Length: 588
Image (cartoon, rainbow, N blue to C red; front, side, top):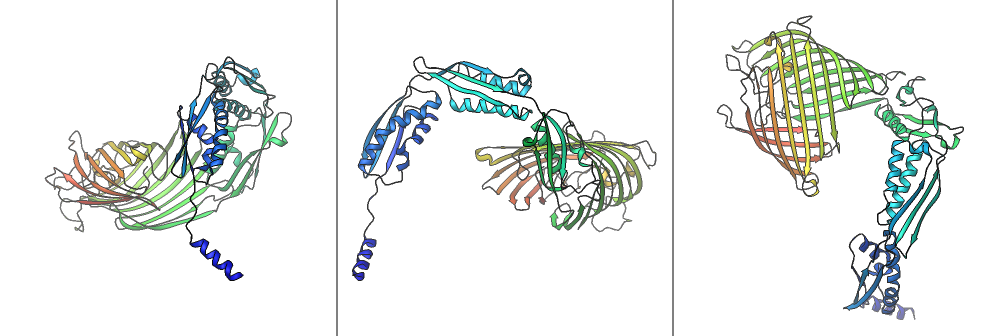
């Protein structure tokens, strides 16, 4: 007996499967979103890929008009008629629903009650007006629900924590296709802040109070709680920040706030290799103390050792939390640079104050720069080669800088821009070997366009001007050069600029560079670029821009954007061939 069952089972497995009948559903007479609402609401839509019998199709078609009519009511169509047309399509069925939506119901009146105290608040008043503007429009239950919920949310956001929606009703009169919206809120008292309790902090008592953007007794505002959370996250002290208003424990119109914190890792070590055509191959290492003491001081150190650049820097910061997020910073930077046109060894001491200022990051401080340098040297030429300029100088100068950037994505910017402005000046020759004043500006703009934003237009510009009593006393980092990865591609790093009597590039007092680049991405990570750069460093008004153009490859790698460009000079009798440029880093 068992052997017979096994043979029968094997025979059934070898037989072809029974044919399945499906339903192909069509809806006409209306456009989306009404068409989609009807198609989704009817049970027929569930049988596009499911087996269905003839009897089931008949029952489903009978129910479809009523189901479709109910689906149209939230859009204001209460008198819709729906007929069906059923056609066999081979082993399947084609069902077409013909919809006549009829005249829609319109909102003829809006009756809204809200406490006058709440109505005087701007965002609540705007939410109320959004509901009142429903009058005269086609009744749409989704729009009504959204406008009603928005006003309730605004009441809570502005401290009316006991607000209750006492009446919420839409009365529809089918006979004259009209609807009346009736809403009534009881706002109740407006709550104020009580105390802010920090749990899990590693800092001295009172330090974190500076991050709180409100005072005890101020009216409760949800936006201020969000600002507090963002400020604490931005301070980079904590791995966990939860800002929780104690609404359930609130009494007498006062709500306390509990901030739950967990310290982040105190010391961060970073390092790794890098490569760039301006600097060559190198390694970078760093150590940062997120907090040095219970007053929240920070300390950051970095060492860079590359073929053409070596730097050692340290920076100590004293944060002063508050509305402007101020910080006092002192630091030192040793720099040993060896470019195609200059060599320098300098030590720079810096002291400044940074803060948020009308949406910008403002920095005001002083620098003391001292060191030796040579300008105009080519390769490994001896230092006594004629035409090489040698210098040793000490400069003490003030600096004020403004920076701002905006981007929709930190990894791959589709819409964004950045601006950096700086002004530097000595106080005559006080503590300095020469007097100078300098202004610089750098800007970049990125805009994606085309299908799925696969194309990007990138515009870039740099400008600078210097006034000095002795140009020869300025080290290379305070002179202007052009050429290189972030300047005029097709030329070597800092290889463009005014020349001395021996024909060697020594840098200029002024700078003007512009760039246009167009990128196209074939996949999410791979693309190509075409670019044209133009500019030069110059003295006085003798501006003769050099032009470089070329093509490049773009790869959005796991470590960031990698750009490989090949550029060549255009119409330059003194420069030929191609130059390779490699840059790894963010767009802005």
